Length: 121
Image (cartoon, one colour):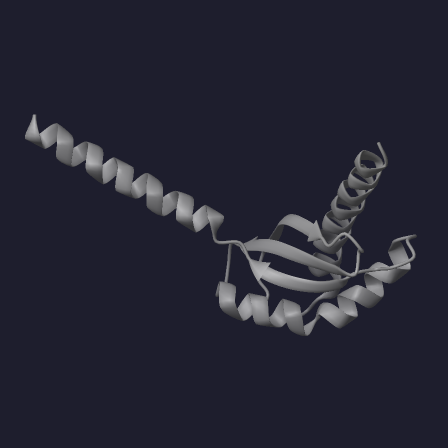
């Protein structure tokens, strides 16, 4: 039972971090390398010491955005510390989420395979 409670707490904290970071990035970060960023998910370590922040971007180069976000991680950590009421605010690690790109590639391959199959029939 205790594991379930702590797991729910971790999910709630991760969701709050996700919401707060989305707002903070939009309002506080003025780095031109960071375009329109969407936070996809936040994964916390069991001890809450680290958080992997998976994001996608609609504009700009995803690699440059990742570098810029990791460069601003300390500042965002500081701002997050002011908002969250938890003992340990995790160190933030930003990672570009490639899952949407992969899904698009797979969809394209399936479509090509279906098209090829239809021509053979």
